[in-house]
Image 1: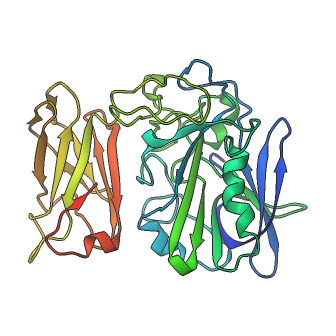
Image 2 (image 1 turned 180 degrees about the horizontal axis):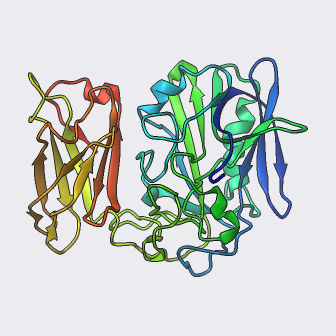
Length: 352
């Protein structure tokens, strides 16, 4: 069997925590469904010595982390419908299954490399998690949703709460798969506010095979970065490299809900963020259902192009969804997500 076993999401209330700072460090959150308590073992460091992208002065043990303080994505409307406790998930599109590469959950270019532990306050991953978890122990107004692999035997809990594909380290390739990534979501119910935390190892590739989840090519492994912007590091200075394949063309806006009959009226604006002409021949726009629209034409340097969808390929749902841009090699260049609320205004473009 390949991929992580028993892929699930756990919903419940935070009741306690524990920090394990041994050679394989974890931050453990104990979560109750009202009748039983489960352990969520969150990796805060890597045991692998392999890296996809060599960054001077950065130990391989440090994780890539993205923390969304005000998370907005169509998935949150589905999470609140879940029962408390464990819910098994199918590893395929159009389900609640997470996929960092295919589901446009966040911009990987915004991920920061954070130390596992470091002297001082608010400067390592243990501190980052504690800021959220400690103050919300036994808080009935806050629920947590944890995606990963359910384990049993002695105790019941969930682990692999991180990206689970593209491993370059042979020890972990057996866990590769698509639509089985982990993640943490905190829901502050009175404000209907969400905090989302996504993490990945430096040994993982950011372009993976659509069947196996294995790394496609080491030449396409470097973490995507936001063009023209270096990430804000969480430790002493370093210079991350930029993979120019990713983010060279950006999805800037989309008309999701045109007035009247929508077929043939939806459109997307693409922006060429490079200093070269980009030929879109063979590029694709994909929607939430993986239906695709083939593109053509060219975009001048630092210029925009409005693409009107035919209505026979990709379709932009008014119930919220994702829009993904793939180049002629089938590699993801950019992706965005929008909510049902954003799509509710008729004939108003959504800005990304």
